[in-house]
Image (cartoon, rainbow, N blue to C red; front, side, top):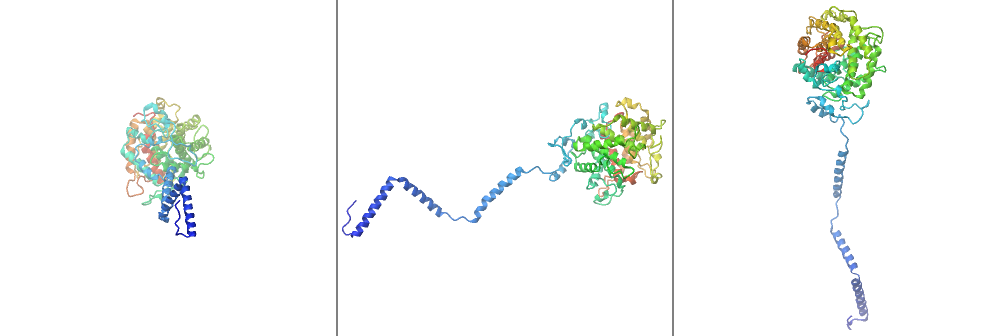
Length: 525
């Protein structure tokens, strides 16, 4: 170190010496420990940079919150469950343009049906019940009975439009069916039934008119469902899935512990049960849906329980009374049950029914009576003059169809040997469908059974009947575009006071569907 100048005082010299010693000390420490300098320098720079930054404002924290919200939205969307049927309801409009609702049945449910879960789509099960192939002669013998459309037991129906043309139907016939289904859909009550005397509560433009009696709601609802099922509409597929589903739920909810559909408060409760059973067995047969199997089977069991030993049915349960009308409906329901592979005692039920029909058939002309051999069809006192029984062969038609369905053989050649079938059809040719209120020839019940029987016979029988049927039925359907009656038929026949407008519409619609609901057994093309 250099010499301290002499002009400094002693104290100054001491302070100068201490400063030089301290500076020397610091120098030596820094020289020996360069990392200390680096550390101090780095922290100093960081501190200066931090101090130069502007203070953050409160709005800055919103940015990360927005990013989190977006992330949450994506995650929820990915995990969101499939929409409920109500949420997808608008898509049903697009379904209306499908040409064949049976195609939609390829969508298979991945869960079992329960009483509380009535899916709108599921597998239709065994293809034997649902083939869309056209009728092809003897190979379709098993298709006779309700539901026997196309080449399968409960085949295609709407897919059976090919059979519509082959059977002599056309665009006018199908349009009549389409309009009728729309009317029935629009007049279904909120609880799923068709309210025989209060259906006009669903009218939007005007009041349709033509009420029936409320005690027949179960049976009339069964007939309405048959119209949809006959057109290929089920609770699983088609344009009217919800309509069919709600109707079937209504029937299932009014079935008692013994299997009877509807209350037994009316003398004619068996009519209700037979028609409802017919609809339920057909619904099960078409879909093989487990949620309807028990209801269908129990309905069939009640028919068995009600049959009189070795004979047929009427108003009670094995009360020894029989008539051809209730028996006809019972045969239809049992034949549907056979096609649906439900348990049916075919030997006793069909043999008993046929025994009654034989008993009621007048052998010379083949006329079938109501409760007496060759007698007239039933009429209420109020309707006897307006619609004379002499103008109808309704029970002859029932007898012909019952003979075909109950025959011990499924061989067409054997069935044709029953001359009572031919004689009965000859009688019906003399009383073809004719809409003439003044002459009292209108009889929807007759036309329904006559259409089924004559279609089975085919040939000239069917050609003549079909021509008259189209004129009488199609040409008298209400088609005014600005009226609630559009698609329906006015109730003008012997049973209009009981069944009303819904009864008239359902039976006439079913007549128009015979082309693609049934395979011919004994008939000629």
